[in-house]
Length: 116
Image 1: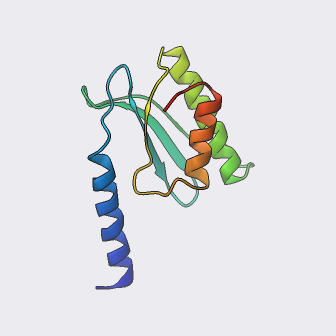
Image 2: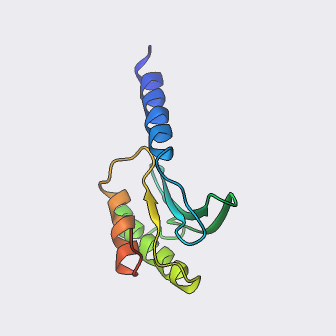
């Protein structure tokens, strides 16, 4: 199997394994992370209804470093969640390691007052 195909297969399997363990409700939605090479996206999801409650990305922060922009995205998402009356979330990092930009989003959300 070619190297890139194996990497994609392993990422898909890791994501499915991780997704099977987390479930978001209205009281405690799932904070899901997607990381691309340039940007990071985070969203609060109610899995009971299958709806996204709030979302944020780093698309508009072009003059910052990627990790700083990710932390600010976490802070902004935490503030949005507070306005919606959400205090606790289930953190779902997907197939990514809890390191770098993924950890920065989590730290930013914690600074804004969200609890995991």
